[in-house]
Image (cartoon, rainbow over all chains, first blue to last red; front, side):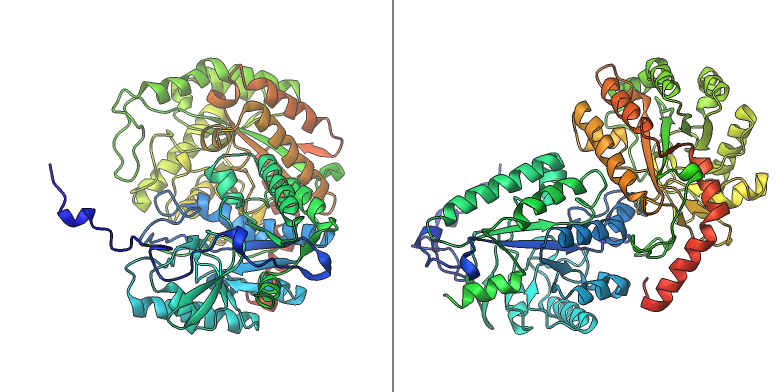
Length: 308
Length: 316
């Protein structure tokens, strides 16, 4: 049996705070209280993932969750994902309008290239778009060649800025996966905030070689795909969990600290006919609640930044 | 390898030309029992293992055989009770193994469509000639045993090649003319029928078969309870029925006798069937009848609408 070298029992990062220098160690309870506009207590960030899963998935360095699983051509998963962009999304938009919800769209640049109709629809609505990488098979990952990743980020951002006419300040990596260089590259490309690190309930400063980014809290634990397809809970159970989370955050906010309820949702998951009513139930409750501020990710970011 | 199968164009689910089903129905409702034969000793396929255990793989083989020995008649009687003619996704070798089942379905005027030869023989790795031969065999077997000119296809075990839909449509036309080989259940991108691009230019449609409502996906992948399955069927119907007032929608329940006909599951399924068929504006029909109706009345309209929108916006 193989044995370990003695340096396995050396702990070079063993000191107060984090084991890296990207951000400061800070407990939520010690933060300065943030107030939302008009005395609202909970900021509601509805984040819609608009994704393109290519049929010829390469899976480098791993097959993305939600991607192709069968031998090529996996028509089953390709068309089930495509369902979201041609059918489910229009159920979402109707629901947002019915319940006065301001959504934010995280879009793969390849999808924007493929479906100008959808880009145009969102532009006309005036909602914020953030970049969700190039497509669901163009992953950012540890050990990735630096110039290759720089080129990928630039291609994704230039393309989406050009197609949407928006300056695009937000980023979420496909599968929330990053290399050790991703934050540095994002900061060099005029990104202000990113949503890959799920270690907080509130925004925080994230240091890069090219200035400070804001890490925005978009929990995977409440993500529709994670709850329904990973945890195998029902869509009704997803709605229950969201409502429980809201009640708790609202209670916490009663001590005078603004909170954020961030929901990452996908039209290929909750846009199905048998699921959409549970999204509508949640949006009806939240959209009509007097203590809720339904707004874009960037507005939440700016409100937080102005009170830092 | 392609990033997109190229079978259909983008077509947003809003402002589409209105589909009116016969008698003003809002939803075309069909049930597709998969009547399958899985082999005890299938040959190896380099791309997919048929069974998780070395042969004889009793857990999978025997539960599926149970579906034919016990489950089939239970579901058939249930469908009959609610005036539903099944559209059978058929492992065509079942005609040779269990002709009694074929006879029962024939007597009830059910539709037979091709689901390949065996559900343990995958399309992966076949040459175009081999796939064509397999598809042709399935057409001929259905015709020989039932007299039906097969209209629809669901590739065996959802295993495809880049040519699958083209081959199916072409063989149908070669054997029986353009009335055969007119629709596919292999794509899950929509709740309405979609025109499909084929290299032959034949008029051909994708008919929604709904993997989300498929009992095997519900029970084996999503691992939901029978009562939850019944609830999902009703929820799905409610939404498509409401939207069908704007333009006709399709709801399919794809089933497997080894899943849905189990004594502990059939009650929830029956409640959903009773609920759905109890609505006034439902067209209880078959896959072929929907496909033919769409091709005759809306295919050209749909194609024109898609082309107009693509020209305007430049969608892929």
